[in-house]
Length: 113
Image (cartoon, rainbow, N blue to C red; front, side, top):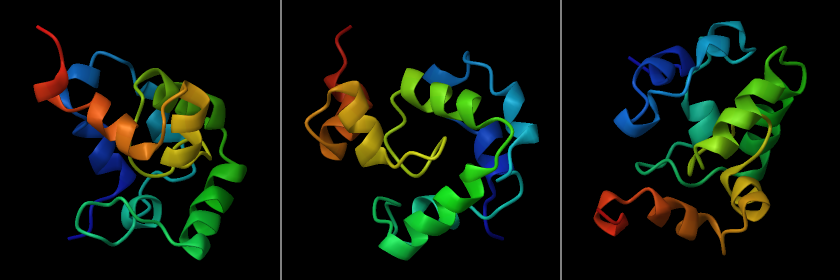
């Protein structure tokens, strides 16, 4: 069975669960397979140009676009398209050197105790 954004919203990593995702049920992507937003590669890090365009088109008319984008930026979401932004676009906005730096920020081995 293919995961959906609904599935993802209920299984976000533990340290981000405290942030409300109440808006997710109203999202245009609700029920859409996650591979549309995360790519088909095993680590979900690659989205082709057409795939990005498809994901962003879904986001374009979303009634909770701002909430989704705010959540992705506030949690420094390192993968996929959220709130109409790719991981690379979010990394740039947040001042990271690139997506890899954003991913490393989520590595629990790199967090200070």
